[in-house]
Image (cartoon, rainbow, N blue to C red; front, side, top):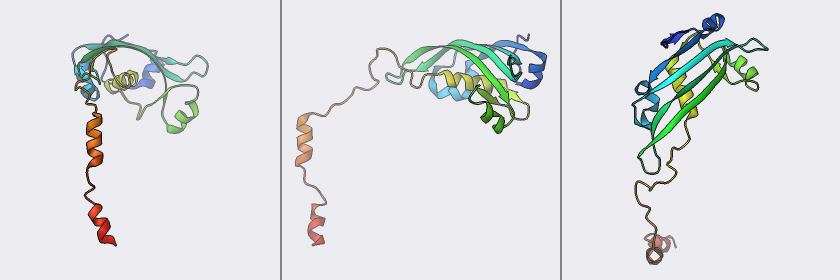
Length: 171
């Protein structure tokens, strides 16, 4: 078991070694999360086991991600705490055909050139686990909603159409 997460791995080699990787990654290093975060402080705890599926002996990664993210509430634009508690269970594939064949039974991860960048892999898993729109249970919108008054609607209806003159020219 490694306590430090490597930058790049050969996941198929780690499957053969039945390796267990554990470590932490700083949230500030996840560039694709940048626009969603109120703060990039903190870290994610990662635990990954490389093994084979019990029946078909396919290479797989199982593991767990945990940590705390400070997302931006999409209603009030203030920080909202979001707990990451995400299980991983993926079968590794080398080709699109292999992924297509297995997609009904397993969640697959395509590995190009027998290489997997750990930070990108973890960041993808975090992005998949985020809510579509982070919102507080109760909060006020960033800008107050402006409702149209009935008088304003009537005033707009009374205005003359500036293109009405063109209608006369057409005849």
